[in-house]
Length: 153
Image (cartoon, rainbow, N blue to C red):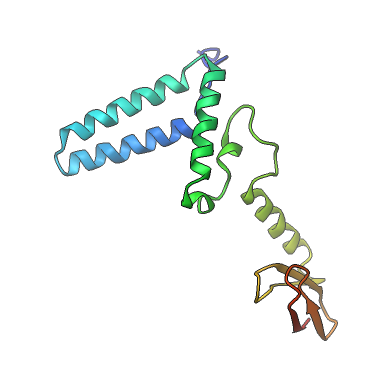
């Protein structure tokens, strides 16, 4: 049984979305007594399972890439957090390229330097700025927009 998934695609972004959509459709169909939604949900689950157990990894990879590209063009793409390609089990984008990874690294750096550095955002453009702590009142110029701000560090 351990060797069953060897050479198979497994669960990716498209498979997860199909499974989630099928659950939502089945729930709506059962609440409002719409039987055809249940059948659509069943078809979506079967497609998701066939994708997960498929041995044609290249074709599933192309389908998932097309889905991720389509998903990246939606207005909700920024809300999702981690990039869809970083969630892929094989052949994903290089580590550390998603917005979530960048935010995580920034937060970690801010935490490590919290005693020596003060961080704030530019009021004009939102750029994250850093100044040394304990220097009194200093004038900071945003490198992105050029706005000058006086801050107490």
